[in-house]
Length: 177
Image (tube, rainbow, N blue to C red):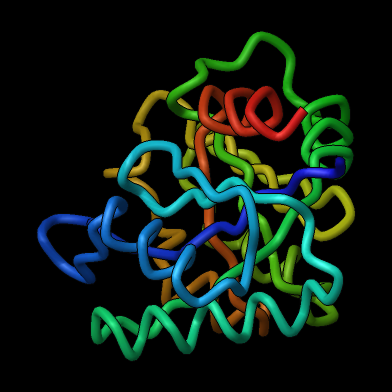
């Protein structure tokens, strides 16, 4: 059985966009939109059997979350193999796990997006686009010192995305194997 992860953007962050994972699992099981559901940590990682129609499943999960919890959040799907490929392709040697993030995009970024984002980097930051995944190495300053805010990323990329640190990406690949 092929497994996937549905990645929710910006849920349960600083008390905002609250989506309790136990209640979400129950709602998903009741709805039947995806099968064999589990979640990993509270930041919105839904592990499931790969749906027959991934686009429709993401749309239904988004609508379910909006209806049940009042949160409108993009839902981005990655199959196990895509996660494994993403990990194998990460371009940074010896990264600090919590400072290296993969931003999973809903689709290809807008033309010129990476050049636009590079202009916003603070010293020590690096970005590399690998397929539909943007790797961001935040460097010593971490996410707290970056100028790559959600608004900046959204505007430049032209597509929604959601980021996970390297440790979480590794765990999601393990859980979907």
